Amino acid sequence: MPTKEENEARQSPGLPQKFEDEESSSDEEDDDLVLEGVIVRNPDVSDSDDTSSEEEEEEDDVKPPPPKKIKSSGNSKQQTPEKQVVKKKKNKKKKKPKSGPEVVDVEFIFCDMNDKYFHGLKTLLTSSSPIYAAHSSGLSDTMIKNIAVGTVVSTEGDEEGTVFGFASVLNVTTYQSEACVQALKKVCLEQCPAENKKELEVVLSGKTNRPAGIYLHGRMVNMPLEIVEVLHKQLVLDMDWAVKNAEGGEAERKSLDFGAFVRLAPSYRMSGATYYKYFDDEIFAEHAEFTFEVEVPKTFGMEETPYCMVLVMTKTGHRDAMGALSQMVNGGQHNR
Image (cartoon, rainbow, N blue to C red):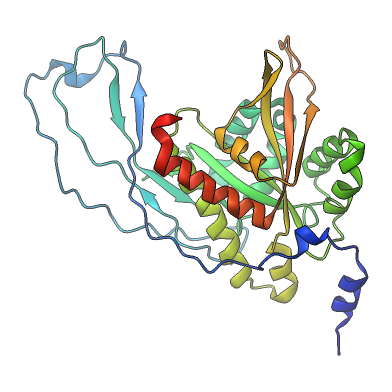
């Protein structure tokens, strides 16, 4: 006999069929990745190695450490899947002339959300777009509470909460009372074209059989493409793991089994054309059910009106976009 919850779910308005007919989770597991990440330092900055005349050979066959297990803390008893360590092999070089750029080795790790990352998350949100700047504190707090589905790119042994990048999905039903989520939904609905408005209202209603999530991501501009790919992959692993290991029973499992994603992608106009701030958003847009542009209020000192592109994706569209992203990074990064 159907339970009360199942009867209520059947009476609730469902997502459009294309959002409903998705597999509940993916069983695919990615092998651990060991990638190289570099940051280019300002060549005018002096370095203590400049006084050394001794040439040191590059160390080969440096084995990467096993993935670091990051435990959940504070806001949830769940333990998310092991995050990956993405390590650059130590590379000792000869003294370089001051006129050339210097390569600095960085070890990236993928961590669960944590209170110590609040300021780093807020900074990246603020710099990504005015649409997020006005609500950066609330969004940062909410992502930290949403520990089951979210990941942060930081560095090994970092105690100061440095954030190089992040990705998270916020359930529009679970967090419907949060002012930051309400504000983003309002912007989308108020500026949605008439031909898509009814569909978007259903997606964001919070009453669908399968929930919709607001897809948030951001990063430093010089992050290597390989790290960007792993950042999005790690978020997919988080979502799949959360569905399979939900401790709150069927209700929690359903709340993490997203059927649609809404992304407010920072963009700008140039010579009459619209461009995305992040190349991965362009890939997501190509696999979205529909997209539309919204104007964002100016912040102090801005002369031109900022914009965002609203992308509405099904789960299948998102996974297809992940495949295209992987192909672009691994097969055509030198052409990008």
